[in-house]
Image (cartoon, rainbow, N blue to C red):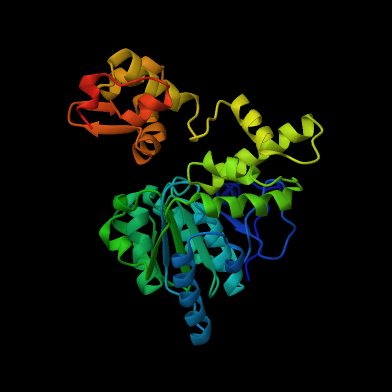
Amino acid sequence: MNESLDFGTSNTGANEESLRMVSSQPIGNEPVSDEELRPHVLDGFIGQPRLKAQLQLFLDAARKRDVPPDHILLAGPPGLGKTTLAMIVANELEVPIRVTSGPAVQHAGDLASILSSLDTGEVLFIDEIHRLPRAAEELLYIAMEDFRVDVMVGKGPGASSIPLTLPRFTVIGATTREGMLPSPLRARFGFTAHLDFYPHEELEKLIDRSANVLGVNLDEGSAHEMALRSRGTPRIANRLLRRVRDWAIVHDLIVVHPADVKEALSLYQIDSEGLDRLDIAVLNAIVRNFNGGPVGLNNLAAMVGEESETVETVCEPYLVREGFLVRTPKGRVATQKAWQHLGLTPSDDVSKLF
């Protein structure tokens, strides 16, 4: 079994390059720290009930056959638990997990060195797999299907290819943009899991669990107030819980009441719908400066002082999903819900649109 890489040690040459590219994560029942709220087993994972049932069957079948499971693709928006599920799979199978990411693999040779160091049954987790270089993608899907890599030795006319046979392993890929994966690579995954946004009820359970881990005593209704502001995302829910914990510590609170949650999160400009400063700025710009729209993305970004990509990828998905904003061929239009949230009455022209 390969030794785990230690980021706390000093290495030179090839070892330094390997450390930047990949890390080995120890698997075990380690104490969960302030920064680590992830469950270690599938039963402890809150939410995604259908996906959990599918994954449980998938892993149970692999254990009964006594072979590593097929490759797994985890797809969904950021913060829904893709990395957590990858760690859980390794724990459930009781095998080591090697962790890297698409941007960290700059050349096909980087990926070849990782693959050639894997042991039988080991899990290779590739976060943001859609950002792998094209040459690395081609090498990966051949390795996933045939369990071999061809290593080029030398350059020019004298170069030769040396085939290396790999032990059977499992690749777990995580992506926020499944459509960017080339079809040959996507077809190599035996199981694709799509993660959905969480309803408030499941986020409340997650917040209660995290509060217990962090030692935060929440009064009835406090978890609900945080869940309403978490945008359906566990990562955001845990982040808000930490900020509420900070508020409780500074104000010497033994029990955190719903009113405390509201006051704490209002300090961070997060309202009851989960909208933050930039979300409100976008809605205000459309409603107050453009009479509800339509307005083009570039004009909107200039009005709020942000890059167009930030507005399009950070703000718009949630505003559209929650019905505050619609995209039209002429530009972005604020809905009646957006006007009402800002405490304004839509004009007659805007009302006719909905």
